[in-house]
Length: 371
Image 1 (cartoon, rainbow, N blue to C red):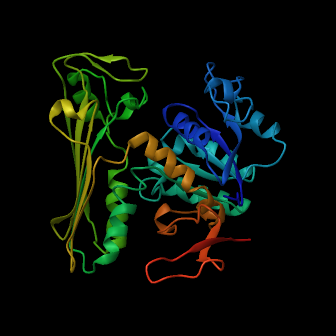
Image 2: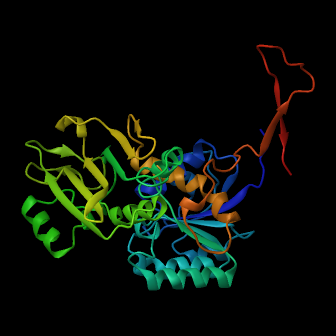
Image 3: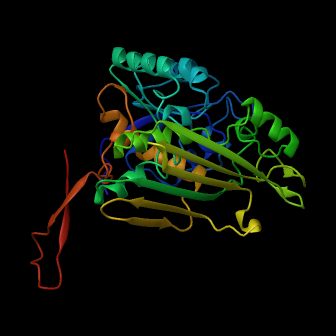
């Protein structure tokens, strides 16, 4: 296989998600290469990426403590930055601006960046303007939002019209997601503290269910006037290992959450989303599955079993969106506007093999590499 348009990426944030992206590069990514890496964690900063992740397949570059020092050390400019630090859009906007001001396209793993116009219109406008000034693109991307509750639903909806309702559910194992979920999901908290933080808005669970509902409503022509959300915490009578820096989650503390969202159009729930996140869902009698129902002129029922893996899937979505955002028109864009089929990853088209004549039961093909 020939490499084509091998773009250069900087990875900013090498935690639970970033490490999965690094693992994917170690396994082999044909049309991308790592140009630099950034993480301020003293356990990683100023170490060799190859040594830190114990893989000879990775480039022997130094993980820098800041984006500025990373850019300063580049031999050649990078094309795209994978932003995997925090989620709150107003907090990360200066980081995204810095990358775009350095001439890089940006893919952010922030849930809020999937559809920032909904809840952060001022920041969305500022990011769009910054991208335009620098002739680059910026997008939010992940597994959910970005795939299960939106892209996948819309792809299935292409074989229906007059859609009247959408229902999607997801059951996932969150083992290994890391300690940052305590802040907005509440894993590991005593149930009383969970409920207190839920009332004050500190706990929001999956952060972008309204964004997915709004995106589906916009594209299916469902004029959503209200979105209701609900959260239910689950505990387990024994300690459960989290597989992350959280350590063991003690009995009586939150090991799972069921979150529901309903988007109402003309007084009825036209879009329903349900997300069940557990440390070991099998303990609760749940199997990992993504399931989608679409009601319209063609009723659709589809499922993925097991469900798309959360962190790993998010990392791979980011990698596979790199060339989409590089080739997109400058400005703030959406993964929902990218090609349904994605990029030709091999950089070729398949033609009839001129050296082998086709038979009635066999067709010979050969690659023709694109310029």
